[in-house]
Structures are given as structure tokens and as C-alpha cells.
Length: 592
Image (cartoon, rainbow, N blue to C red; front, side, top):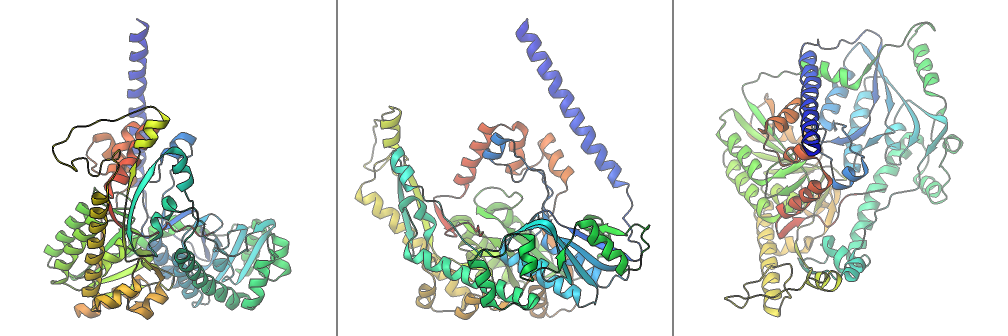
């Protein structure tokens, strides 16, 4: 009886939860559907208090960043991301909006990679050309965010605020010592001395080649960053470096002492100064419109009905052999998108926006093939974001033109494969032993409890070498360069966009706007509407798909039973979806 009651009330609670969940979100959706587009009052300020991660496009799925760790710790974030190109459109529109007199900028909690930050800075610079002002305020400024703040006409720190101004660093974790203690041996195969993705499992420190490429990448980023600060503050680059090396600027008072900020004020005092600047009375409230509300206004007015179309395909995230998800490039899903665009007679050109470190070698090649067919019908121009490396470069190489940001990480033309051998760990640590029968000498090839012999090892390296040769061939064909010349700049090495331009891996430096301009030129058209792919989903579409079982995204299926165990299984599934052979960047971008 107790078991029955326990089950009964558990089911009752589950049903009640689903109905409550459905009522809150569906009811909220229906009510919001009836809301009018916000309006902006005269003599207003655009409040750019930006929190969260900037991605190429905004993701509305609140569960996209769930990981096993977050499930165990309870640190699940439901924050949507900020779309870079929506943000840039908002700034462009505000520049010519007579109701908007200036911007209040607070980017303390904004997270983005260097290339994105530099792109955003350019848009803020364009806004300033309208002779409208920018007031920046900060309580704590991460290093990379400083170059957005210093661009402002006035930049104020909270009197007890803090500042990070100690330079940039990249750090890698090396797991070989741990794996040795656990008895896990990794069979590692790669081509290219710079292909350092496997070093964490075969070394205990950086190789000279990896240290060289990381140092050069950081030096390029630091050079552009310090030049931007010098332009804003009139402090020489050498002096800025000395301030970093001596940890001279770590507090608001120190930032003021060395003239990195205009002054120290609390946020209400900054807003009061803006009110005075705009002629408000002390008793009046400052008209401020949030980014999200102003974005709705911009979206409602940016309807383009031109007959010609430019298709913009967002290829953001790791490339895998499975299905797509927010921030994941699923091979099958993207091939269908490309084929759909190919059949649309109104599409006159394609911009492939790549923001990917690569991933599955097989999926990268299938996408390449689909783009190659598409290119016979319409021109294809690639716009590179924060990174377009390894598999991300593989799918880019077929384009008519490749455009990168100066600090885009690209190249990494190489391949690797890793297969763990856990036989010793299971045998010695937990007492699991193995025995077998087989009909051929190598029937257990690629088994995770197989002790590889010389033939099996050499065969795997042979496959890796073949994959590298295919990669070189694809790039050689797309860039119209000799294979030997490509090999010299390949070997797994990562380059910044400005260096990639010098060696022929990209054609121009610039952003999405330049890519759209170039594809129009190639298509010989002047006007075109922009159609984006994959189609964005609203929060409700993501959640209802999960509840009804109609959503095919892998991540959403997981949400039906949110447990740490299933999330760990999901992580394994994601790793398996990458395949054995990977065209993947040698490291994740984490720059401090």
C-alpha cells in the first residue's frame, strides 16, 4: 500500500508540474504574442547593460549550456545568448534614430572572444560618428572589456570597483599523469607538429611548437588591444605594458591615477550627469530603453521584401556526425539546409558564417561536398568569426572568397585520432579481466580493451595520413595553391586572420557586412533580402518540442529526464558523434 501511495503521489506531482509548466510558458507566450512593439520616447538613452555570452546569433534555448557538472552543482543557467549581428544592427539603427541621444554602456558581465569584441568595438566607433555620446560605467572590468569602455566619451568606475589589467594568457590542462595513474593508455595518431589537440594525453607540458603558436596568437591579440587603448587614452603602448607587468591597475583608484578612466562615480551619479547633459530637470526621470526592447523595434522595421535573396548560413559550434542543435553543426542537418538553398531559384548568393573549431572529419567532408555543388549555382563567400579552424577551415576552403577578422583563429590544417585502451585500468583497479575468441587475427581492432600490435598501429596512422592528404587536396583546390605550398603552412598550425591573409589562407579582412557586399558583387546584384539558416527557434518552440516529443534536437530529448547520469551519457554521445578521425582545432579558446 505504501508503495502504491508513493507511486500515485509521484505521478500526481509529475502531472501537476507538467500542467503548471505548460500554463506558465504557453500562457506567457500567448500574452506576449499580444504585446505591442515597444516605442522609444524623444530625448532617450539606449541602455546597453549587456549580460551573458555573445554568439553570432541569439540562442533562445535556455538549456543549451547544460553539462553534467552543472547538473550536479545546480548551476544551470537559463540565460539566452546575445546575437552579435542583432546587436550590431541595433547600434546601426540607433545611430540614425533622432530619439536616441546617446548610449549608457555597462559590459561588466559580457563574455565574448577577442574577434567578437573587436567587431563590436568597430560598431561602437561607427555609432560615435553620429556625434552622439557614449557613457560607460563599470564596477568590475575584465581585461578584454576595457577596450569597449575606454572608447566611450566618458568612462566612470565605481569608487570601490576593481579592474583587471594584467595581460592575456592561455593555459592548457595535461591529463597524461592522471591517465597513467589510472592505467588508461591512449592510442594517439596525428599529422602535424602543431596539431596539439592530443598533447594533453601524450605530454605533461607544451611542446615547443604549441608554445610558439600560442605565443604568436596572444601577441597579435595583445598588439591590437594595446593599440586600441593607446588610441583612446593617449597612453603609449610601452607604458601600458609596464602597467600590466607591474599590476599597477587593479582597482578603481589606480585606474583613475593612471588616467584609464574619466572619474569615479556611482551609477546613479553617472545617470544624473547624463540627465544634466540632455537638459532634464532634477525631478524628471531619464528616458532609457533597454537593448531587448530597442531590438524589438529594430526587428519590426527591418523587413526586406526584395525578390533576390542572399542566404546566410550560420555554422557555429563543433561539427559532428549527428543532428544539429544550438551551437552544434550537425552534418546531416546542414547538408539538408544547403540542398534546400540550392533548390531555391531566388537565392542569388550564399554567405557561410563560420564560427567553429571543427570536429568530425567525415561530417566536414560531407558538408564540403554539398557546398561544392551549391557553388556551381551561386557564389559562396565565407565570413569567419572568432574561429574557423581545422574542420571549420575545411568547409570554408571551397568558397569563392574567404573573409576573416584580424583576430580570427584559423588554419589548423591537420587531423588526429584518439582511442583509449582501458584494459589495464579495469584489470588492475577494479578486477575486470577479458578473454576472447575471434575468426580473424585483428577482429578486435578499434576495441577499447585491445592491446594494439604493430600492424594495427601502423594501419591507423596510415588512415590519419590519408585524411591529412585529403585535407591538403581540398584546400589546394579551393585556394588554387600548390599542395606542397599548403603543406608548409599547414601541419596543424593555427594562424590569426591577419597572418592568414599574408600566407593566402584568406582573401580579405573584415566582417559579415563585407562578406555580404562581396557576394552581391559576385552575383551581380545590388539589392537582396537576407535569409538566415538554420531557422531560429523561440523559447516556446524549444520547450514545446521537448514536451510533445516533436523536437529532433539531441539536446532537447535529454531534457525529458534531467538527471546527472543521463547528462553524462549525453556527453559520451557528443564525443562519439565526432567520430574517430577529427579535423579539430588543437585547443579550445580560453584567453584570460
